[in-house]
Image (tube, rainbow, N blue to C red):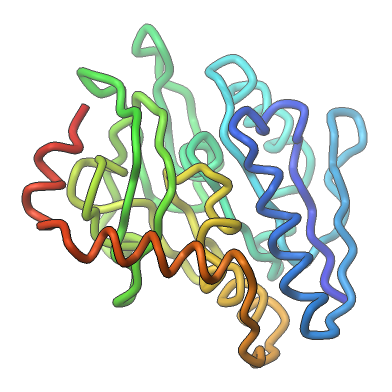
Amino acid sequence: MLTIGVVYPDLLGTYGDGGNAVALAARARARDIEVEVVAMTIGAGISSADLYLLGGGEDGPQRLARDLLSDAGFVERVSEGAYVFAVCAGLQILGTSFSVEGDASYPGLALVDATTTRGVTRSVGDLATMVAGRFMVGFENHGGVTVLGEGVSPLGQVVAGRGNDGRVDGYRASRIWATYAHGPVLAQNPWLADEVVSTVTGIELAAWSSVADRLYAQRCGLLSTRHPADDRTQGRH
């Protein structure tokens, strides 16, 4: 049984990131893996799960989510072996500190050495990242600039858009994936959804072709005709 916890969807669900749970569950069940998706709303607490999903959110909800998580045993559950897939505000919350509108800085959960400050301009538009030789596509809408600490690996190299800083996007820790890509990103990148399921369950997944895979292949065909250096420059909003 794969248990997926959608963390505070009433706070961190601004950009349809809850669809990541739908994509993960569908692709796991297609390989005969039993899945339970649990919406961990405000007041319900953070129950045990194999994988937690943190989505994007506005400044106020982001701060509240961080405060709630710090008292809910979330850090302990991750330290004990749970996995996390985090997007945008979720990415920032897991770091050491993050800034919101007005440049006020708040402590993060410090699960990853990553610091987010406010950028000069907001990043809004398509985001494409090269992750281990494969395109990851999505959409970004954030005002943060994230700097990774020494020894923290980015999720991938930015091809179009800005991600963390115009060069790299997100980070990859031992049990954490994090990205600025909304979309929901796992629905747009079925290969990444499969990687997450396989890593969390320890099961090597058989190949499975779906509409999502065909749409992803079409997007990759468009991206392959673009010049990465030009896209990185043009993608800074």
